[in-house]
Image 1 (cartoon, rainbow over the protein chains, first blue to last red):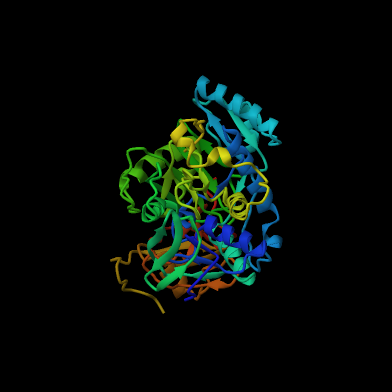
Image 2 (cartoon, rainbow over the protein chains, first blue to last red; image 1 turned 60 degrees about the vertical axis):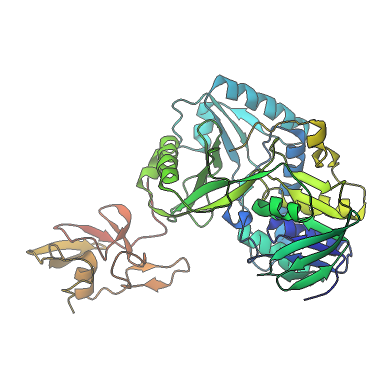
Length: 382
Length: 100
């Protein structure tokens, strides 16, 4: 293992790999990424991998659009010899209350103002896109055809390999045990395979971000919540877009392989970093999914798993430097949408570290926003 | 060769019945698995992989999905554990399963 590095990134999910790639691409020589397991072994590899731009806050919309634009050309850009399997079948968001309908209208207006050409669809129009949708109890829908989903393992691998080609070093199965801070400055990262001296550390540890922050003596207002998910056997194409409902608490998509992947949130879920599965999830998930898409009653389930949402009070990520510890950067608190923000995270954090003019100003997402209490809550999260 | 003992299923061979395999009339015994009847009739290719490679009788206990066929219009039937009945319509499945 190397003894020194310009930048040490902690976490080999989409965020960490995208940051490593962008730094290496910008010419930073000694970029090191430390990953406790294998690439995408945490939240990235467990996620639903949906890519949507239909958000309810300006920052989330901008970051999502920038990321989606990148995914469209990612295979070429990253010179990946596989396929990230980006399918732009759109996202169909279901409103089941008047309140939700009004929120969607507001969101669509905001999105349109930012170049995201989403639109409201009535239930008949929605059925043209998803013929098997059960519209009973629904009020309206919102749709954007450029949303979609992709394969999180391939996407992360694509970034990781591209970063390595540009000279970054990735140490897998290596666990960070401590971060040494002296006189308010980052000095060293300790791992179970040796220590690395560095002036810059990026916390991209996903569900474990709080533990890493604490190592540097930084307190961040996040918690990790278990979110469960399941997949059916592969079936012939039946569902084009991702279906999503905030009030029914479901997201459901059919991936190119043919399987339906679906999940739901539950704020009473354990917050102790467990990623076990429960039968209660299966029971609720199946009821909701077959309710909105009745043919699924005949689908056979293959398996279920879980991952961690790293939640912030406003459901928006924490980006950028930490005022109290020089050289310590955060790319955490994605609240369930870190995968789809990966490309933007990579570029914006790299720009922030190098002091470049930011493509999107991320000052509003700095850790200090929680002190001032200047929060804009994202209303649209499952 | 006819499979008469199964590692996890107990099947009592019943009367002789007729069924169709891709339109062809075949015979087997009620209560044995569809796969057992096909095997006895010399049918070794039950399904195809995504890359269209042939897949045959493999785990024989309903685990491996190598024997998915369309039975009476229903996709993804594991014929290695599904009992044979009179007049069953067994077909080689084209593509992935259909639920509508």
